[in-house]
Amino acid sequence: MKRLEEELRAALKREDPPLGFAERVLARAAAQAHQRERTRWARFRDAFAIHRLQWAAAAVVLAVIAGGVGLRIEQDRRAEGEAAKRQVMLALHIASAKWQVAAREINGQSNARTATPHDETENHE
Amino acid sequence: MSSSPAGQVAEVELIPDFASLLRQHQRMVFTIALHMVRDPMAAEEIAQDVFLKLHQELRSMKSSAHIEFWLRRVAVHRAIDYERKHRHDPNVALEELQMPAKEEPGTDPFLARRLQALVASLPEKARAVVVLRYQEELMPEEIAALLRIPVGTVKSHLQRSLAMLREKLGRTLGEVSL
Image (cartoon, rainbow over all chains, first blue to last red; front, side):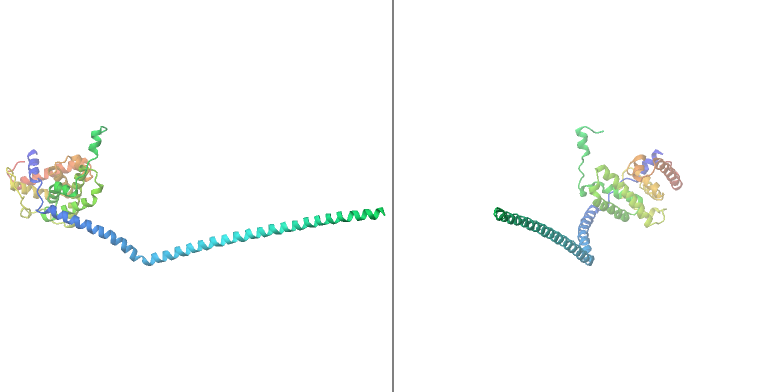
């Protein structure tokens, strides 16, 4: 058994590859790396070119969504402004009514005060 | 268990550049492929593919030992794939085998060629086990890890292959007692 194993070791010993093997591998590796780099860029470019229509459609959809959102925000802002204006007008109306009531009361009292001495003189007579 | 600073330094091993790795391991990879497929041109093609794959995967390699392990495994599997794709008669005639580039003094070239032919006639897994055991001097446990098969299977492949080789060699050469 030992001798057969020794003969196997001798028969299966390592051998040199053909001349220029390493250079051929290095050349192929360089070409492969170059190709890989080109492929990566081409894949990116092709992805954009092939899906140009989809990109455009997506851009339109995004623009519509953005426009819709902007319009909604503007409408909300206007509605809030209108509501605020109505509240201010209502407050002014209330204030004006109160002022008129107060003015009438003040006028009434001053009229009464000016009328009282005249009555007294009438009573004295 | 390398908690010492020296052990930590050893773990952070710098992996040599691709050209150095290629020159360091080209004989190993080429010869594994050659003994698996028995055709020098196919062996070169397989070895080139193995190194190109290494070039792509180099960043994921953790150490020199990892690279060596990886190269052996990929070389064996590529050779088996090649065999399956270009399946032909495993009983290779002696004339088909290439003469070794250099004859080692003290070895019998005829016996070596006959043994190579007989190894080439083994089933692919058994052939891989024999090549890794006697070309690469790996232990059965290492072969088992590399081929992802149980150690017992490696040992039985070795025993059966040696028995078959001895029988066929004895039948061919008659007087040889190995």
